[in-house]
Length: 167
Image (tube, rainbow, N blue to C red):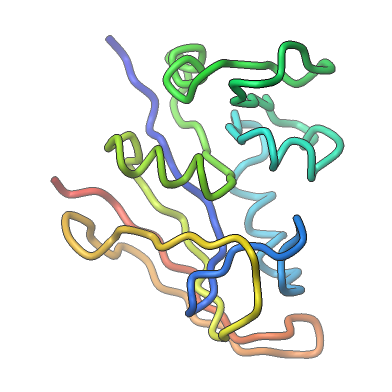
C-alpha cells in the first residue's frame, strides 16, 4: 500500500519552547515564508488546539484536524478521530505535513510515523507554555542546514535544519 512521506514542520527554541499563550513566541517572517512555500498545495495535519488557534484554514492546503472531543467542524477543515485516520485519508498523496501542536508532534514521533523533520531552530531561550523536544538524537540524518542572523525583520538568529529518518 502506498504511504505518503510524513514531514513534521516546526520551529523550536533552544529550550524546547514552541508556543506561549497559543501563539508563536517570536517574530520570524522568513520562517513563516518558508512554511508557506513548503506546505502550499499539500495536506497539513493539525491538532484541535492548533485548529482553534488558527481560526481559519490555511489557504491552498487541505486542512485535516485531529480531535477526540470535537464532533463537527466547519468546512473546508476535515475532522478525524486520530492521527492514523488522518494519515489514512491522505494515503494517495505524495507528502503530508504535521504542523502541530506538541501533542500531535510527540505522538507522531513516538509512533515512528515521521519520515522527515523540517525544523527551524530559534537561537534563543524564550518563555513559553508549550514545549516540544524533537527526538532526533538517534536514527536521523541532518540533510540541510541554513543559518540566518537576526535582522530588522527577524528578531532572533535561527537555523533551518532538515532531517531524514535513517532507521
